[in-house]
Length: 173
Image 1: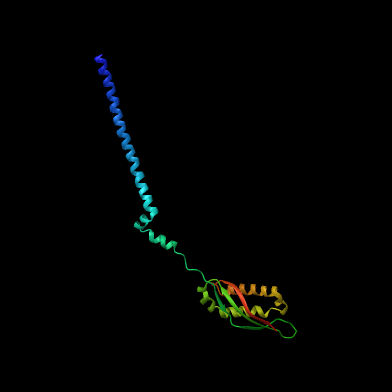
Image 2: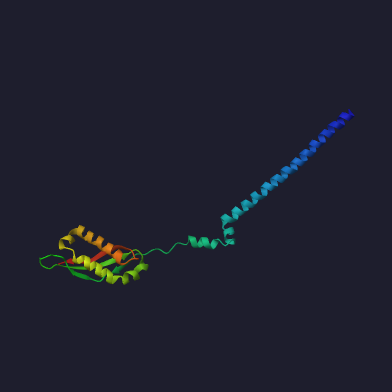
């Protein structure tokens, strides 16, 4: 029995050694998995708290990107008074007196519009001289006139964008 007991204790010894080696391996495996997880968690915490982007020099770029551009402010420009004779054929002469304000989308384009005033006056006068008094009657006539003048103003004042023409005075005589 003593031989059998020795054999049994020898058989138990290697399994105990294997279990000790296995628990050491499991401990190493846990440490190898835990270290990257802890580092990733710390990096994520630093990133989302804003510390890491600041350390990497990325904070200034984000602040510049988040800064809103200055608001675009529309502007009004007073056109000089225009007096033209209308196209009446053989009838008695008829005249149109027009004072208007031009609205542009961005006030920074005001110098472009001021530089285009001679061209605007020419285009407006040429168009208005071909109108007949009947074409200016009623709100539909005024609306058509506004749309035509806006189209011509956008051509003449480019790159400024004309959004509307406001009639201050329109007298047909």
